[in-house]
Length: 318
Image (tube, rainbow, N blue to C red; front, side, top):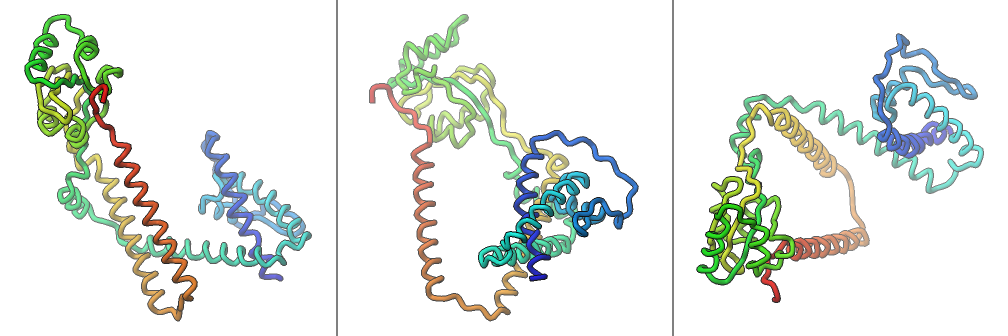
C-alpha cells in the first residue's frame, strides 16, 4: 500500500501534466524570471506533503511543466486529486495497479535511454563533412518548376502554336483554351511544383530534359510527351541547388549523433534480450504473425493508393 501511494501520482504526472502542456503550447511564453531560491525551499504544502523548488525544477527539466510556477500550481491540482483518488481506493484496482507499475517502468526505461544517448561521443565536423560529400544528393534541392502546357496530336500543329505563342501580345491562356486536348485544359494547362521526376512521369522524358535548362517565360517545344506533342510555357523556374555545407552542418551533426544514439539503444536492448530468460507463448507468436500480415496488407493498399493518386494527364473526351 505504501509503495502504491508513492507511485500512483505518476499516472497523474504523465496524463494530467501532458494534457496541460498541450494547452500551454497555444499560449505565448514570457521570459521566466529566475528567483534566487535554494533547491530545498518549500513552495507549497498540502496536508504535510511538500513541493520544493528543486522538485519543481526537476518537473521543468523533464518537460512536464514550462516553468517552476506552473509546476507548483499543477502539483497542487494533482496532489488534491491524488488524495481524492486514495479516498475512493482507486489504488486498490488491479488495472490501475498494473498501469502504475508500467508507467514507472516506462519512465525508468526512458531515463535509461537518455543515459545511453548522452554517453554517445560527439560527432566531429570532419565526419559530418564526409557524410555531406558521400550523400550530396540528400543536400540538393531539386529543380522546381511551374508551367502551362498545351497537348495536341500533330507535331505540325504544335509548331504552329509555338509560333503564335511567341508573337507579341500572345495570351497563352487563350491558346490553351483554343488548342489543348489535355484533361487539365479547364485549369489553363497549369502544373505547379514539378521536379525532374514528376516532369518525366507527366510530360515525358524529352520535355523533362528540356526543362533542366529552362528560364522564366520560355516557350518550349514541341516535345513528344505521354499523350501527344507538348508545347510548354515556363511560369517560374528554380534550378537544382546544392546547399552549402555550412548551412546544413548543424543538422548533419545532430542527425549523426541521433543515429548513433539509436544504434546504441538498439544494441543495449538486443543484449538484454539475449541475456534474458524469455519465452513467448504460442498464442503471442500467432498474434504477432496476424499483426504482421495485417501490416503488410495495409502497406500494400497504401502503396496502391499512392500510385492511383499520382497526377495523370489525359486527353479530353477520353
